[in-house]
Amino acid sequence: MRLADKTAIITGGGSGFGEGIAKKFIAEGARVVIADIHDEHGRKVADDLGDNAIFIKTDVSSDGDMKALIEGCIDKFGGLDIMVNNAGMGQLPTALEDVTPEIFDRLWAVNVKSVYLSARYAVPHFKAKGSGVFLNVASTGGVSPRPNLTWYNMTKGAMITATRGMAVELAPAGIRVNALNPVAGETPLLETFMGKDTPETRAKFLSTIPIGRFSTPEDMGNAACFLCSDEASMITGVAMEVDGGRCI
Image (cartoon, rainbow, N blue to C red):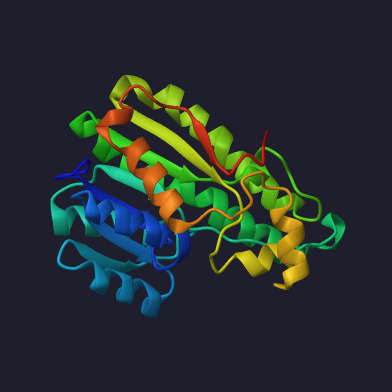
């Protein structure tokens, strides 16, 4: 019960890595707010997790939605201890000059602006109580970019830099900030990155991962639990790769 009596918000918690993190947090004793833009998925995950989980519909790129999310969590559970910025958007493999301004702006808003908005509303609460944890789900793409995903890679690199900057600035206030860098996983975004989910494209993707498999929601849940627990009390500013060796 490494997260007993802790309250966490997990954005994008209605599927994929976010759902895996939510399940692990509940198993370790946390209270969890599932934040997702998709009602059906988010409500189902919260219902499946039981009385210690609730769902709040959230567009993480919206200032008003993020404010309402954090206030709703505090109203329901009496506080907030862990903010997991997991919600993300991918892009189809595309030559960098062919990505439209609309897709670029949405990538930035969902993957980067969301971290800023979470900090805008969670940091004052964390500072008031003298503790708190942020966990930003970035990507190996922010460390070792793949071709034809340039603007997605850029947003994940920005998340990693934000993680480090936040860690240095917020450490004196008792707030830790870390990131996870998964390789592609069995999530709804997998087909987006590959362009087409075929045995051939899977084999090509897997050939770049020394361990020979994708990241799973369980992998991410285990890593997130450690970084958000008191066991990691001396760890801040880290972007931990959960990638089977891809970035070596």
